[in-house]
Length: 356
Image 1: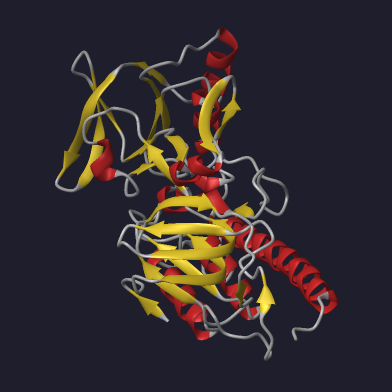
Image 2: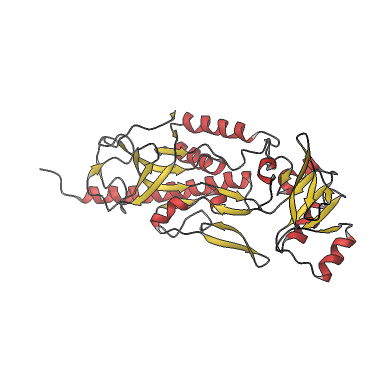
């Protein structure tokens, strides 16, 4: 079932998935196929919305991201998963439950004809508050909220993001091959970026904007690869019609280019987890923080029992296909954890004296 809102009542699920991108939907699909009750809460604001196509996803290369998500939603709901268009505004851990309730099914319904004590989980589960006013309870959480690309402060950059202002050569390099490319240097990784993009075009220029100082060795590398260097800063972009034509330097000169490469700060969308004590950790490269993310184990397990993460919120450099795989791994781990808990609860119930 897919809906714009859930009823303003408290419903229980084996798992609530926060985020409906590749990671979240893959996790929800795996859980639904495992016959788990699962709710996906998705705000409808995917990170790759500005991109017309996605790449590197075997069998789906070049497909619009929206088409992948639409197909994923259909698959999840086809197995009984629920999807709601909303935003999670708060999450809190519940106390250990002692009321009779289900592992699956309606709030007060039976499981195979028997009620199971503590069905929301031995640890009590989680209360998830939605922006629309609804509240649901989850035994486990899979957080796949992704990240936000914080772009350098250059006028006109945001409007062209995902079209001819790019960041990842593996996502877009083939499509802009052999075109004039300028790399906006904003940190110590700028030379690496320029040398990397040189693989896709013989016309690459490095423009020093902020936070980037080149040593003689780096300048020698750039010169050996025929990559000229211009001193900035950049004050704006030049465009003809709807096509990028160059970057304008502080002195007024325009460096011609059809593509501008930037290095965003990748910021995890993890604010909703702060109430559970989950804080982001910085990811550094070359002595510079390039991202924030939630620390997690190989299957996405976090430091908070019952909470898993998958996709860019846990790995800022992950591409779509890797995020999808991470969602599957996390979901399998969640199901295994629920199986163990179901078994413990069943054993405890079997040992209880029969009701008189």
